[in-house]
Image 1 (cartoon, helix red, strand yellow):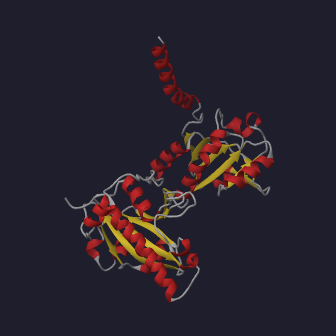
Image 2 (cartoon, rainbow, N blue to C red; image 1 turned 135 degrees about the vertical axis):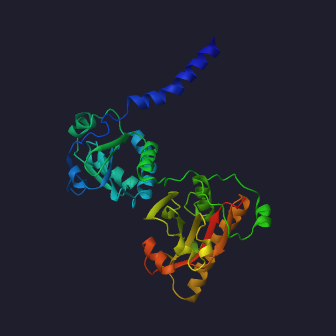
Length: 361
């Protein structure tokens, strides 16, 4: 009897989250015109929803007292960082958060604590008495709507994970990387025994999990203090990592573990440069030294930054050898063209790149 009761309780618990999510799903349906409103930012400047016409918009409803909202903030920040430069159908993507705090000090304190780097507004009215909440028929926060450039609702979600899926669907770009699989691969000695330079690759793109693991191994965070898998002189962390694929160019942000699109389209030939035969590699990881971040000039500084880039490259070599991927370290590339594509100035210096793919079977 007790065993049957236990099974029943477990079964109910299993369906409740999905049921709760269904009950709290955003009410406004796709195609509905998003209700207009205006409210003030922390400086007292009025921001209107109409100001965002001509751009895609992630409209986020939250409050500082809302525990579910606070739990979603880290992933919301990862998503905003990843999609900051993404365009959808040629139009930019912007973000706006509306708070239902009726205590301005609590709202401002939360903004200082969570550091959400996009537009934040509030009309100072509580959720249940808020005309904005009423116009959007909100039964739950957090709630996010995606609004198209004409001001129409495209979709609504109540979690960052749901928002990630919708942004990936609309942009055809999945930039929020899965957690690195830190238990995979051969042991270090086996990997070193298998390490070799390979210049021919199977013609298929890298799986997202392999991209996540590759970039984490190259220069991801491996400690809570933000230090990386690849050591750098004085922990300057001056080596920036860029992934170049058939779809576009992306900066890897190790602290958020996301890809940030910096250019759309196929720019692999710029990395291959005069070695045209390797331009069909599924991916390149380009190591760029940010000399301003390093904070030193001269021959010794260049030597140290080059050594730091070499360590990143060797991390890639060992990871690939341990996980049946093929790679080769290269110095050839069109450095000036890549700096322009990446949106960097001449204080940055591309040093090395690794072509990466699956072995030819």
